[in-house]
Length: 92
Image (cartoon, rainbow, N blue to C red; front, side, top):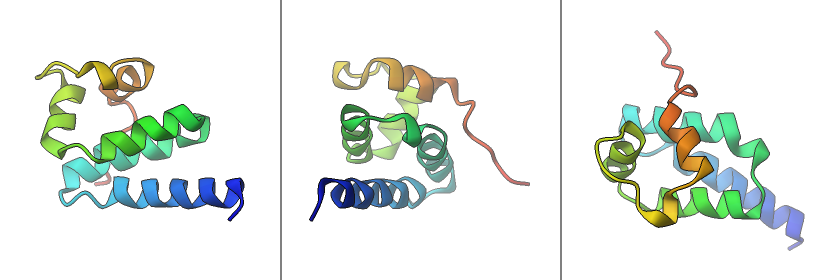
């Protein structure tokens, strides 16, 4: 498999995992974040999001909402962007 095919597969998997968390709130947070930012990610950015997907939804949501401290391995520009919550578009 080529590097590009592998990257395309990883992006598709990350999108699916972001939009299928199990609760609507988590879907909007993870999926909306993916939709808004994935096109700007390099390898490190994608690895960060893949690692985030392995965390418990309630923990990530607490970090994004500022009700719990962000672990050092997730702190930085991507978590700062996630904490803005400006990517969440809840359809009516």
